[in-house]
Image (cartoon, rainbow, N blue to C red; front, side, top):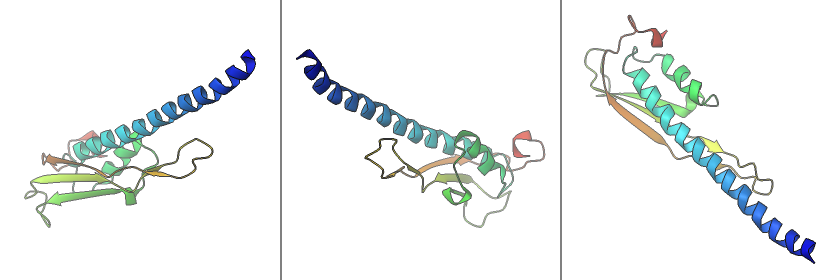
Length: 130
């Protein structure tokens, strides 16, 4: 009798436990996406306009990021290195596939954007940009 009761309770308990663990993994991915945009924006304000160092620095945190997932914009639009005022880095189009076998549908990660005021926008003296 005790084995039957344990089996019934264990199914519910382990299902709930795995759901909590999976939810934590998804939230970790979302937090990584936020930190990735922050780091990308920080690199973008000290490197040349259009530098590939932005994407490579973001890929250090989230290696699955592609260039199609990252949008870097300089404001005002059409500005030059000396006239830009702000840099925005946006991470979009990511998804997380849960590891739960019967839930095989990807969850879309919301788009995250970070905006910072320009700094040097010059990679001549910054080792991060190389």
